[in-house]
Length: 583
Image 1: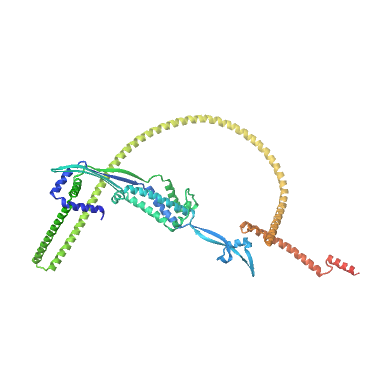
Image 2: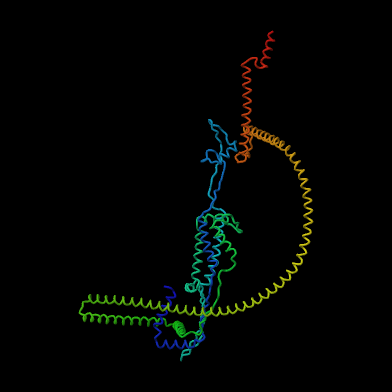
């Protein structure tokens, strides 16, 4: 039970004992009659919340949630050179590194070359991409943005501030009572004030958005991003932030928040005053004043024990009377049972059936009463809406009439000004046209004479240029015949030189490879370098085939010379030398 309900019930129970008593009623009338300056003031706060920032946040949170679900990441590679015994797997990077660092190969086993160390790469998933860090920054900004406004709005909308001021003097025969009560009651987060604030639904939407932000911040991705440095403005719009639908929605929300320079709500303070008190309120406060006077009298005279004793005796008397009444009712019930000619059990069943019938009738009456109250409430609301609509319709008609009159007056004024501007423009246009026509006729004649003169000069110059061009064409044709032959010879020489250059480079690379003279930074795995090596290899292969054909011819010639003595001139000469030596 709410404390307000409990206090109201206690006050009603208190008034049951005093409301119909003649002396209490007389005393209340005396106190209520002199309370003409009694005052109750209540500070009422009217709060209006703008819808633009709530709707923008609700729409943006949808995109943020979907962007978090994408879980964007990149693969981070960590590479190091470790002993061969610790290597678990070999990748392409390991082979490329070993090809560039032959010094790591330290031993040979059978036909295999075994390195002492090997390069290994470890790939790890990293979620700290720029876009995810932007989402975490935006959620933190959203949390602060909503929390500040939600706290301020609840502080104003859920607050109650009331003041009570009672000053009176009552004379009744031999008793004089002076009352001076000042009370100021301030409550924060009052549930009744929250219900009557008029912004309950919008506060629920703001609270839901704040809970959604906290929920998104508690996701595993955001918890992981909380460990890295927070992104700070300005934000760089990456391709993902520009093109991805969800991240684009998050960027729109970010730009809205950083450009929002308002509080998002307006507050108006009104004071409601009750003075003097109506008769019912004055009677209730007179009851409370009399109770305070009694408490002061009882404690001041120290009669608490006497009052307690009298209370206990009265309670005992009431209990005895109630017991006596129950006994009399029991006897009357026994008489009715005997008069009915039924047994006690049968009479109890009869009463139970009657009670059930009464309960059904009572429930039906309660439902009918509820329907009647609902219908009356609906009728009252309909009457209020009808009155409001009538008032709005009359205001609209009056405003429409005023607007129509103002529109007609403005239209006439604008039409008059427009006609005047048209006549002025027409007169200025005619005058300007006449002036331009006179100036234009003179300019046309001058331009025509100038054009005739320039045309004659150009025709003469064109004839001279045509003659010179004909001579140049003849000379160019002769030169072209000579240059064509020279170009063919130059192209042939250039091709031969290029082949010789590539052949020389191939020889140098072969020698470097044979003696291991390549530098560590020299790498031929790139496309351009590999194409160059392939071209060198093709030229060297053609060179090898050509030289091999020459070598084969020479080998055949030498073999034939050895097989047939005297065939070769040098062999015959040797034989003659030998014979000469013998002789």
